[in-house]
Length: 213
Length: 109
Image 1 (tube, each protein chain N blue to C red):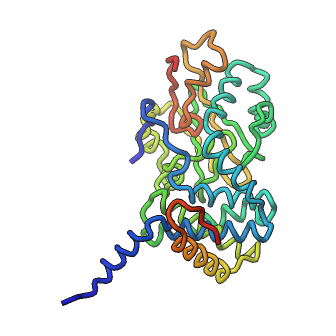
Image 2: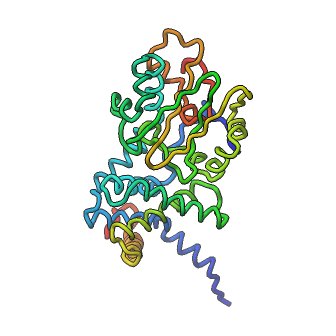
Image 3: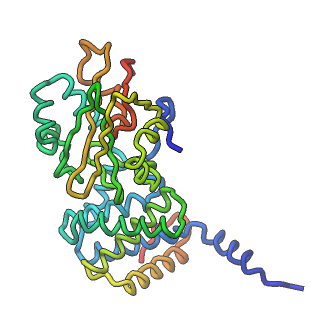
């Protein structure tokens, strides 16, 4: 006797239309087509954004900024004074960095960045944020127990090192300037930039290694 | 639950799904075009994330982007006049377009 199994029917249906995008993908497609059709944003602008952030803009930008700050005291002073202006020297201004503050690690201070509200991040110098930065665990624990979080990231701070946690907002984002490691005398900007990790610029990494990459 | 980055791991893509990129692209380009502010985006996304957390949603990137999409839909309704009914109609139209379009052919409304 034939029976109707709704789960099975649904599975067959999904299989037949397996090229049908997921529900959220269709919702975004619907929204994008209405936004474009009504002239709110041009489709080329959206496509250019996706290409830039998927392919070109990433933490190598921030690493160049850090490397130059190690080599050029004048640039470092400008960066600490007004990072949003200083990154224009590279042409790195853009999404979410209209107001950017650079905070420097020292032998007795460690800086760490979070966005407790959502996921504010200096996209135009660090690219897309990692998944953990957006997690509710990081957003809550970075403030409540920064040393434990740092320890999980492999950064064990002695009691003599103070931790400062900076809470990003839509109006103000942060980039950490890690310390230049020993053993890098004479290195040029490219070589220095290559050893700067993304996490060190968020503050979940601290001691960079002087190993040519 | 956190761990240091593995320097030898292959690079990860910036976005796991195309729609993740499109959500953030729409949000950022709409802020730049002045339809809503960066502050409104942060506040609405923050509220969606808090609600997801309170309802016990998994602490994953998928949850994050679902919240980002919900926040974007709410802001475009409030500030750009894109009503929920229009969105639902357009989504249905895209679904039908995908269903009638053979594999490999461009999907058009």
